[in-house]
Length: 215
Image (tube, rainbow, N blue to C red; front, side):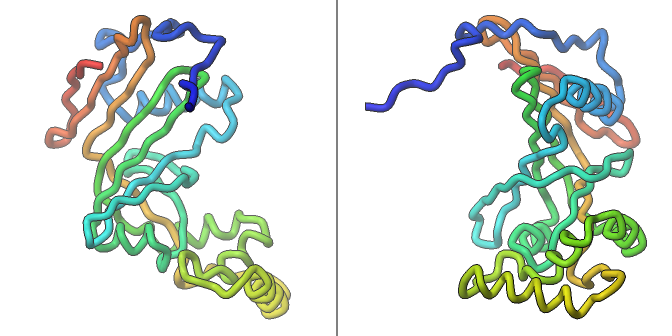
């Protein structure tokens, strides 16, 4: 029989690190996100920019995977991928996505839902140029989400592109950025007795409305 999973360092239901109060939040969810993100980095959380990305296929089957946030501003949340990958194909067809950041050490989550758009070529070029050469070659070598015969095939593909690009590695035409443009944010803060704080920012014209959800 399996045993329940628990954290012995934290009594069940006893989350006391912080609160999320309507009187102290920022009316702009991007600024509220920036505040929490900076606090996650200050807490030395490993990969604070790691986010779960959910998409839905044409058959209605959802899928989720971890990706890394590379840029965020008032336009949205940007990550980079192969446009032939499963996630990119599903997002191109459905044009909607959900993101989740989870910072366990701070007992915080941020959920984001919105539409998806491609990042412009010059912006993708600029980011690609900052990547390590090995990662640049990997973007050419891997036909992401496609079946391959074995590991040896992948490594041979990498070697082939390393020989092809002796100097600067250009950005592959099938690789670039996707931006999630939020229509809503939910900020979740763990609280005692599992009476957690959940505040939702919903887009309303050029601004945002804020409401509270029961935990």
